[in-house]
Image (cartoon, rainbow, N blue to C red; front, top):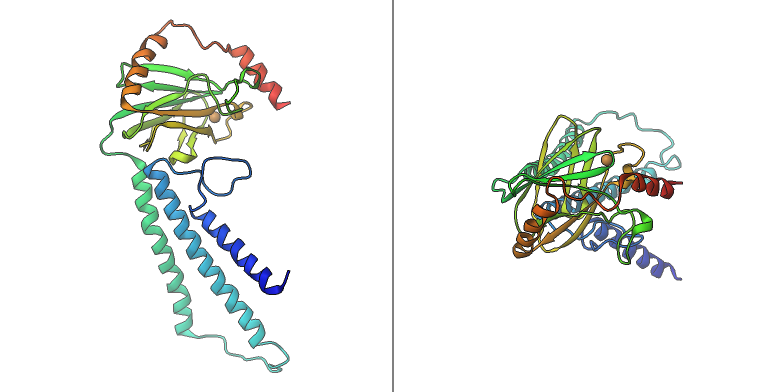
Length: 285
Ligand SMILES: [Cu+2]
């Protein structure tokens, strides 16, 4: 490979990494993936936008500082400067290198704060879902949908059906209508968990004794996976999240069926607790 070819390859690779770090390479999850999953909510689109902006600013600062450093190393090398300069202060320069970074931080802070408040809550919620973390499963309550509530456990590796994702599929998915503003209230019944769904831009601590709010609007029907991402004990890896977004019509059918399926005293999950734990412990060995 010639030098110019190598240089071109390096430039192309860097451009690819930076684009990936932005959002151009965002896609459905796959092995060896770099960068984000495809955004399926307004919040995640905002997160990707802010991320791309910060990456470009960071690249510009890094290139500028590296170039300055290289120039100084060359310009003030000992062979051409046998007697070192004794200049130690330059007021204008010092003001500039204090004020410029402050300005850069302000430029980052404004969209960053805007995004934080955007993620915080939705003004017009169409529906509320309460999420309760347990060691080690999630519980979902639909307080304004006839108080439907159920538990959601990971499917042990031995019970997976073809097409189901290991460590991500659950017995009862949390179902939401697509295109609607869903208020999410997260809390915990025991230790601190965290409710995290990357493609939907949802991440909230589930803390015992506290309720923390966020919201999601899933842009299209589909299944979106997440995980508890706060180390919460032995089976922390066994409490995935599977969100299924449906059309309004399908959601109405689902919630009507759920009222019977999850009625108090209804049959519990076919995967009983003992076997679930045994299966999980097997995968950890
Ligand atoms: Cu957890």
